Image (cartoon, rainbow, N blue to C red; front, side, top):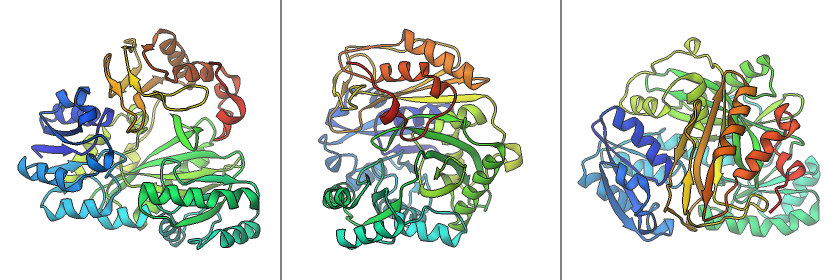
Length: 446
């Protein structure tokens, strides 16, 4: 590959550019009028303004993006995550234009994008799934099924992601209230109002496994990430290896992820997500057919560049490592730095007056902003990803504590105080947490 277009914005574009620059691959970036001053626009070989800030008028405008790709004669399009990364029709259009899509096939994207279809597929693959329904026609059917499997349940959008269209319900009344609003959100965000009901796993861990497959039929897993620290069903901290699971479970969940991916002939990078109970029983949640936000912690512990692997696979080349060659070392934790109130988690867009990341050993920063940048209200308010590493989990935690003591950002609210408090909590230090941890244990004073 000589040139690729990156159909995204912010930190993930910077991160992809970093690998491409090392490999002498030219990059074409796109940006909305709200993002014209962000660093990635300057870092790309070329950059094109593609529309107004609302995503539908810019980052989701398939025709404009494809026109630029053709004019620039790019070899491939990297979708990053979010936006068009899991849009099967976009994948087909890219390939119809004779351009490689850096990701799995459109058929795989389509089959895994609908969570109900994905559940059925995983049952066929012999992968355990959370007890749940097929598509629920209306709230009456939802209540009937919830009573059949027992509360609490999770009401979910079939096409959902990022916690959108998802709500925990404890009884008939809550499910009655949640159904219409969740369905309407799903229609607005995904153009699909299909809903289903799943049994809610109490005190659950959210464990995911990184997988990569090539076009020669080789497929590997790169071990797990623990993503249980969440707010509003969205991740804010991830670590690997999980401090919770045993070596036996680690082996079993890795093989389950491989079985899931092999069943659908998966190629390129992806993630198989599981929910795990307190007895280390795990159940398939979904497959993300793209690069994950939290991929850096896998890179740090495995010692690979996943974007480079994505490019190799898209070029038709074989994976550089076999399963027996892959063994994690050390510990890595990623903190998602958001422009948001650390106590209410409400977004806090605006201009960043000063942004200082202290230069430290064993710390990696993947940032999309700099001093003077404006965090737009139109997009996810993530400012940067802070990745801390250590030979042990305790070392990584201490490095994180030292980092946040020296870190500073002025001009807008941001959630570093949450991380500073979390790293001092004994339960977290012991690895004793679930997806309910933040809501049950941790508050930050304003």
